[in-house]
Length: 334
Image (tube, rainbow, N blue to C red; front, side, top):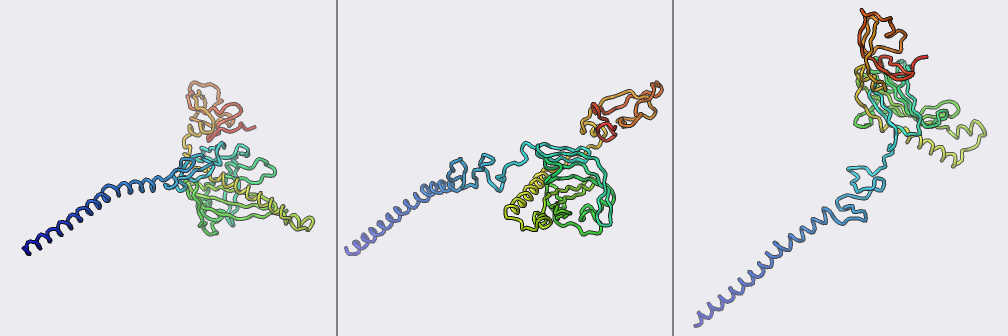
């Protein structure tokens, strides 16, 4: 009897332990399979999206409200900056394949002027294509000029300081709309306290040396006082001077930042239409007549009608008081 009682007692203890294990196992299983996924899902929602701010931006996901663009954005994907060039004009030059934007209040002067660039001992023939300046042309605070050169010296030394073959190569570069330009900055001083903060960007492309030059001009107020009344410049005068320098540099930088290369007009037909002309056909009676002849020159297609020489050729009609010089439409030479 004693043995049977002991066995019964042992079985009872084992049964109680098993029941306790089953109970705790059930609680654990419930917590693991039902409660934990709900918490994990809730936490994930908080991490990925999170609470929205007053503008509806998911701040936990890196979005915040950009006032100047009036939308939610991530600053590493899209800068929160105002488009300073909105509403600007666009100057396009099909002959040399580029475009640049400028404010509607700025002055644009398109040029075809050949000049000489003095780079140390080297003299480089260079062409001024266009100049954009602040509105007051006579006392302009800043301007940007686009130069193009195709001579051997310019092509060989396009990455040198001032296109000088004896000068060291420029090492600093700046990416402008996907293209790396060599960058050189310096201050140029002239008589009367006139100063220019000059920045030059150069690149060799299409076997041409493109040179963009920005000038932020200002007068050294301390120099002016020294040459006139000997007084020290006041803090207000120095503050106005610094503001003019900053405004001029901002003008230069904003225009340079819009410079883009485009397709170069390679055919006469493209050069005609890209410079404002229209293509048509005319009957020419001159011997050796060709398409898109220079109709700025005296003679051109003005030969007496002779059926033996009659030839229908393509021509560029540039409109009133203009003519096609074989490369583009220009004002008719006086």
